[in-house]
Length: 206
Image (cartoon, rainbow, N blue to C red; front, side, top):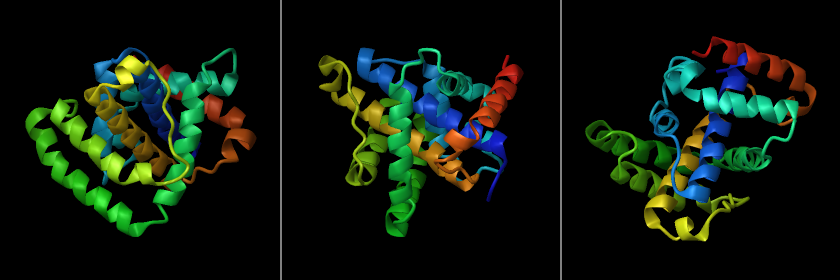
């Protein structure tokens, strides 16, 4: 499966939505529930028909698309979400090279999906199980994804679980980025085209 620059930009928007939320959760213990719902639900859409279907609609990653555009255009944007995203892209390369781990993650997500259907995607039980899955699989890969924030929140198990679940959502978007033909050098050599694609998506948002 491959896509054009618009598909790749949408995937990066999903990734940056996740990493911006990780920063927010780690800093103040909470984030926008609609954005969190969209990101967590993307984890369970492994066989979506299109990149947009992974998120339900482009509207649901509007936050991430705006963060991406800020990063591409500069202008004093917080660099932390982009740094986290870059690390997740590196981790995804190692994850995609391990078929056994990929099978385990897919199988566990299918099992957790039954709880998602019963409780909802952002229920603490669902986030805890996704967090455990991330901890037992993705967090063993290098480079480690290091999250900085308020120690008072980072000491709370439910906050840590939410962060890990959101990082798993970020990995889902990184996988989509690669499937759509994304490459590291795109951010350097296709920066202008990516920024225009992000603007085009944002113009469609309500």
